[in-house]
Length: 171
Length: 417
Image 1 (cartoon, rainbow over the protein chains, first blue to last red):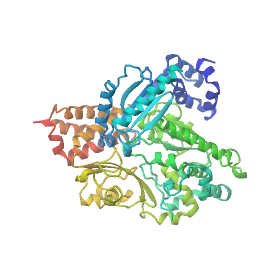
Image 2 (tube, chains in turn brown, purple):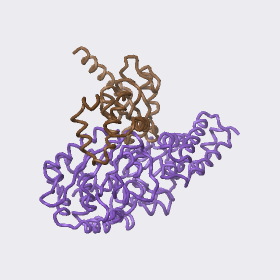
Image 3 (tube, each protein chain N blue to C red):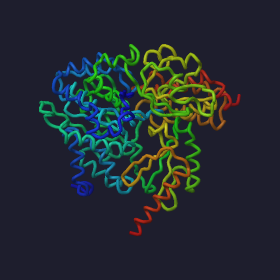
Image 4 (cartoon, helix red, strand yellow):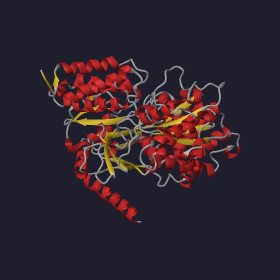
């Protein structure tokens, strides 16, 4: 059918099977997650692939990608460190935590580290208000929570990821 | 004696394993309804229990079930697991730690409205949780509790998870349906209500995760047992998500009617650094800011008493505690920035109103405002109220109006006359 379909045929058939025949369009969000799994953003050609699979227009797919914050149209760091700075987290110091993480990584909020590994972003509530400061790590097709953070713990996590990536590259 | 009705994992280790759940009366209720109860009798029992929707609206659950028409099929059931209100983190704990009780509740609700397909709509950030629930759903299929002709009866049910992708508005039930249909998460005009025209245009029941998690024990132990907790108009227990300036933030499962005083000072360990309490918000960022005087602190946390006494709805019972160090102008700048970000853009008063409130409060925080801007901010909020399709617009104004009215001095330090 097309590149995305051929690459993930079995998984895509599994996604489509979750919805009734008249609700094929429901697959558009699962397919956008699939399309950005490898690179962390949705490549332009995937839009037409998804449109073809779900039977809607490419414009519709693009508007859905733009509406939801977890879909990304542009490449960024391999991992996005997304720190919640909403009211309950801010009451527990998440704003200065964000500043310090940015400083340690040598970036401003929204920027990517020189090694291309980390983009730091301030995001909205992640339903972890009692364990602030906290962040989620979006990358490699996954989203993971890291709670009860401070700068030292987070920088340790950052170093572990850097080691993991370096080991991958050597192998 | 077990202490918990919802957060049972705190009593029973490994209740997230199917064999442990079953050994602790798990699935007894579902087996009872599917084998020996008429759907209408299940609905009646839930009506009699007085259970009210835990997502925030507090609408009687059994009555909501009764709205699905019997002359239009198929029916769908959707569990609202989009938990995104700043200050709310209860559904996540339920699903992470007591997943089978939640799923059993969803199965009971599905049987009651005779739906053969149910969806769990989770916010996209709950990516790991969705994968975890998929495993639990598979366990139930393998054990014969889900699938075709369940437990030898004629009833069939399939459950699928569906991930959102970062949009607070999708917690609003019609926006959730739009999103689940693969569209922008924007609310629908009502009526028709989802009970008549919902998912794929079919009658649809949408219940919050916590609401559903109450069902197995209501069916097993009966409506009278459930009514032995809580108040007459707000029966049962509730999970209170406590956050902000308290020593022990977290989820507290308590009977409805517990007072602010008891929740914050006995369970929550009091205020950080022994500071003085200044105000509370009871429904996350969508709340009025209520002065935490003795009258407020003695208010029982139940749907009717919160409205009667302090005119601030209980909502999802996500209590944000604010101490004397909190600047209310700053607080409002945080809440309006949240709603500006999350406004779906469909209704002009919400889209533009949140934009201007955000702009005004940003200038205030930069001490670039004039004193008239305080009244201007309040006036923008009032112009949003009552003019939007869904409650988000309304929500964005609650803290603004109440904070300006009750803590004006905090705003005045940021402006020049």
